[in-house]
Image (cartoon, rainbow, N blue to C red; front, side, top):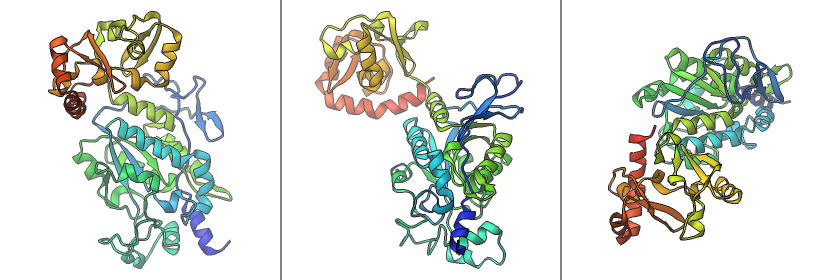
Length: 405
């Protein structure tokens, strides 16, 4: 193996431990964590492993107070074209890291959660450092994360320092915060903590590369700064060298230091739950659409009542169905059949208020179910249908943020 290959190999021992999550042992209030069996096991790459006999505090995400942090989602770490793929590729592939990071981006954006990226760049002046640690030397030797100038982006596109193409729609959407670059491993050399604080964030869900270097260092720095931290282990990966498994090293420290360690599946569930719900239901029963079968509105102008014995839940409401076939259709595509604007009055949403509905105003237009408060308001809504829908669509995110529970 030549020096460049060895360099890349050593360097990439950064990041990969799929921990779906760990079960607390004899620790009050932490007993039931999805994804962990009740025999005290935790998910690892090759299946369940016995969990550590230490507390597992857990993290309950709070809407508006948490963010997804993705570290180094860059070509040099995550692409076969990157300079470290020879040593991290096995771990990235085992953990499905590339796909899991994208799933987290998608989940966070879908839940209107804040997303931060902490990148790793080296400029020409960084190569003049008088002393370095082992893997810093390797990174400089192989021109990892190299950029020609801090003020220019010429040559950045498709370089090793660039984002993976599949991540660009999420990162370059004008909403994601890309903080200043970290220079060695941790976030104490960039403005991440400042940007999180200024955004009102105190809970951080971490993914990215590489597990035992930048991810672990960011975790330690943020915990020292007073943030509550959860790690998504199978959305990280690390270098593997003979006798040295970076992911195993990180996994152990994730479990011993972070408040919680999740799989991507768990993280997505928790992100979705933290978004909250805003839905018009009947009292404590939580029944939507007054018990009418939502699928039946799409099949006939005369919708039918659902059966209390045939039910399914979606976005905070329980819907009843006339038959199992309709239930199956709903579960296959609930966003199609659920009423718009959480089942509140569509015209009300168009003027930025929440109003109840009369089920007799229900109509399906453009393959969507709309309801209104009464027949007069229905007529107003339909008089400028496209404009009303556009205004309601524009207002709904704000109504949701202000009223979701």
